Amino acid sequence: MPALSSFTFSGYLLSRAAFQRGLALVYLIGFLVALNQFRPLLGEKGLLPASEYLQRTSFSESPTLFHFFPKDSAFTAVAWLGIALATFALLGFSERYGAWVSILIWTALWALYMSFVNAGQTFYAFGWESILLEAGFFAIFLGSADVAVPKISVWMLRWLLFRVMFGAGLIKLRGDSCWRDFTCLDYYYETQPIPNPLSWYFHWAPQWIHRAGVGFNHFAELIVPFAYFLPQPVASIAGLITIVFQGFIMISGNLSWLNFLTMVLALTTLEDRIFAFLIPARQTVLRDPYMVFKYAIVGVGLLVAYLSIDPIRNMISPGQVMNRSFNSIHLVGTYGAFGSITRPRYEVIVEGTDEAVLSPSTKWREYEFKGKPGDPTRAPPQIAPYHLRLDWLMWFAALSNYRQQAWFVHFLAKLLQGDADTLALLRTNPFPNAPPRYIRAELYEYHFTTPEEKKQTGLWWNRQLVGPYFPAVSLQSTGFRNLLESRGWL
Image (tube, rainbow, N blue to C red; front, side, top):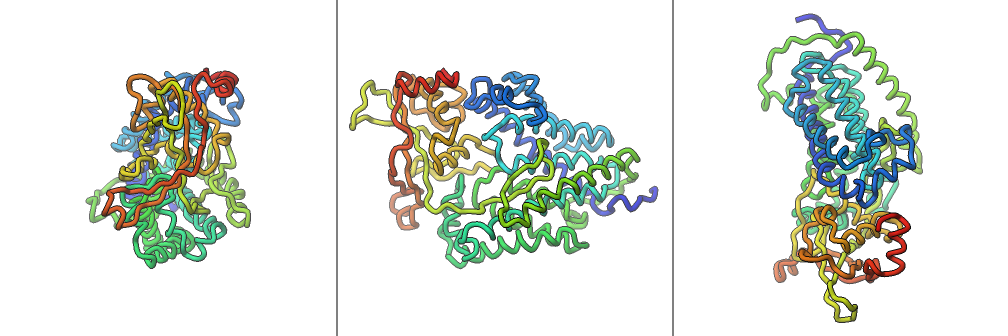
């Protein structure tokens, strides 16, 4: 075996392979979401057509392939191509056929997914999109299976992991007072965007468990991240703590692929001997990266160091912001989550009726969403690491008003039109034979039932009407119709 230079690590082959497979799986989920949801949300006739947005922005502001092909056929083709490449990488083929194949595959995955993110507007304005793109960009420089693991590439991924974790810890410490008095978990499980089947049980855990959970959160996010850069086995221990911490969050809610992706990033801290009991060790003849590849890695490392100035300033600033990209390619951003915790949970319930004349006795039927709470008898579903973009935006809508959600009026119009693509985003269509004549939205306050109430009634939720969110309208309502026509939606 040829001698390897100090440019590379030894003992991280399995760690790299595990990271690459995990990242490929996240990409696969992301492209599946795009295949199923991008067209109804952002397609040519979507709720926020990407073509209209791209006409108002330049390629340098939002680099995306869809500047050249803003068509539904292109959205579908790129999603399928991403699925194929992600599957290719998940099966390990991207690393089996040499460094240049690896570079090509990971570059293509990054560019294709960035095309969706940069055209996705509010439906793609989530921190984990930038985290995935940043991790995907660094993966380009990890090398194939026959190449020793470049140190700089690993340090860049650990630096990303540090910013994800430490940024989240800082925003909590500076944000809601409940993180400082250790009471945030009294509310979080109930008011998080999309609870899962275990959220109810976590909510009713003893208070000492909630207090301990906040303490573990501060330890995992504010102290442990510094150990990612320490010698082994300390770095591996820090990585394992992070994986356990993210695993607890993952089983208590539906935060898309944020927790799973963070766990994947934490794999870069682990030595191969951590995997030894799962994967039998193999003797592999490795070589140093090609010289041109080394120069590229060094260049990217210097670029990351320069681009880190703004995120570091943001982290040390008392005015820290969450989930911000400082450039159009989403490289070296700043991250954070749940700096504030909502106390009561509000839900926007969309209802329709086929009655020709509205009256106090009008019977309204609810549209049920796939993930977000609606029917109080329905158990919260398990969605993550899949991402329901419309359901997440409905959570934000309940925290604001429809005027702040540019897509909401168009969404109601689509339901009045019986649009099949929009209805496919929902769990149920209460008007299977013909669209409703009128539609409205009501705002409710939701709370988990107590253990006694759940035992007696079988309900998961109690809800109380707060008031109207959007007035009852039809496609013939003058103001509603004028608004739709002014936007070209009718």
